[in-house]
Amino acid sequence: MNAEDRGVTDAPDPIIGRVSSAVDSWLRWLPSWSPGTHRGRSRMCRRCTGSPVLAAAGLDTDVPHQVSHALVSRMQRIIDRAVDNYTEHELPTLHAELTGEEIWNAGGFEPGSGLDPEYEGVDLDPESDEEQPFLFTMAELAEQTKPEPPLPRPPLSQEEKRRIRVEIELADRYAQDIGQRMCFALAVHRPRVQAAVQRFVEPQIQSLLDELTRTLEPPTE
Image (cartoon, rainbow, N blue to C red; front, side, top):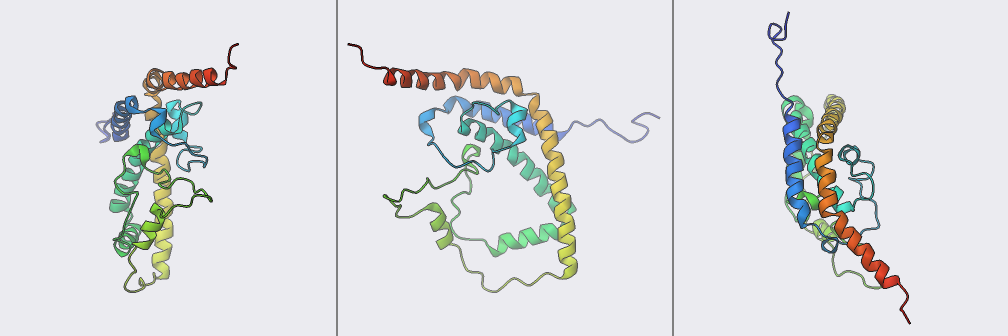
C-alpha cells in the first residue's frame, strides 16, 4: 500500500517557508546595521544566551549581539505564532485562561509593544548610573499606567487547574517540536547567513579594530 492509498500526503512543512521568509527579512535589514547605531550592554540577553538558533545559523561565535538578536527574534516569532495557533485550536482551557489574563490586564502603556524584531526582547531602559539617575524609565511608566482591575479574578476550580497543567505541558512539547523543526530549516540557510555577515558586518568590525590599533599606537618621534 502506497502513501496515497493510506491517505498520507507529502505536504511541505509550513515552518520551512516561514523560516525562509524570516531569513530573507533579516538579510534585508542587515546592510543597515552599524556598530554606532546600537548601544552596548553588559547584561546577558535572556533570549539569545544558549539559544540553539545561533548554532543552527552559524552565529554562535564572534558576532555582534544586535546582529544575532535580530535573527533570533525573527525565529522566536515563528515559534510564538505557531504555539498561539495550537493553543487556540487545541488547548481550550489554557487559551481561555490566557485570553482572560490579557483582557484583565488590558490598557496602560506598553513600551515593548510593536517593536521591530531586532529590538524585541531587548532591555528597553539603559543600565542606571548612580551618579546620574534617570528622571523616569520605561519600566516605571509601564507600571504607573497599568490600570487596577476592578475586581479580583474568580478562582479556578481544581479541575480547571489540573487541565491547565496538562495543557501547559502539551504547549511546551509543541513549542519544542516547532523549535527543532525550525532549527533544521534554518541550518539550510547557514551559508547565506554567514556570507551576509562576512560581507556587511566583518568589514565594519575590522575597521573599528584598525581604528583602535591606530589610537593605541605610541606617537612617533
